[in-house]
Image (cartoon, rainbow, N blue to C red):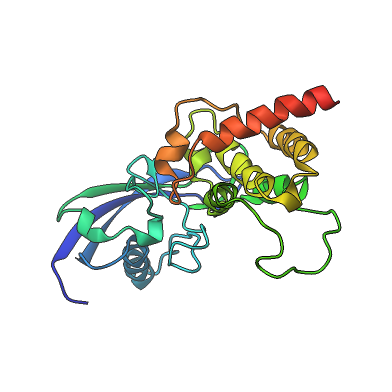
Length: 252
């Protein structure tokens, strides 16, 4: 891989397992190309660590195309590294300079316990979805694309919310470790479509109750979640969610 080569100092969180006490450990990584992605740099780090007979750094990854949301890292204090609309796997080393010191940590939240190094357990999100993030009413077979007219504004709002990939950056950025942006995005996605509207009030109530049960905090209203969201989900969806939650409480 051509391009300018860098020598970097990586301070990374190491933790053997969920019950172990973790700590930051420093490594010097050489021959890092400016064209590498951040995860490719982490691969290079692991190759150098393994060459010394040590355990590589465990981190989540899958598609490496900004689609799956697995690449959960806090880089220099900011989830996904701080570039708008970018996941960790889409962050490139050209944004760093030769000699830089980079701090890499896992998501920090009570509801996201660290399993090992940078890998956290995000199954709390799955349990929230299981409480209501779906449509269960009988809508019949799949209709033709134009058989069910949906106003363009509503379709656009639904698609905006549907972009959420459930990475958890919103939780990691919030000082209260709130999952409101994730939960509200899932509810908004379904609530703007005709198929999702019959269950909308029950959906938001059940998802909110599960969110609280998982140990996520309250919304801080500071919008850090929107700032770090790789899909730029707007905090508007949280306002929609709160509106529907109030309606659900009156419904009983």
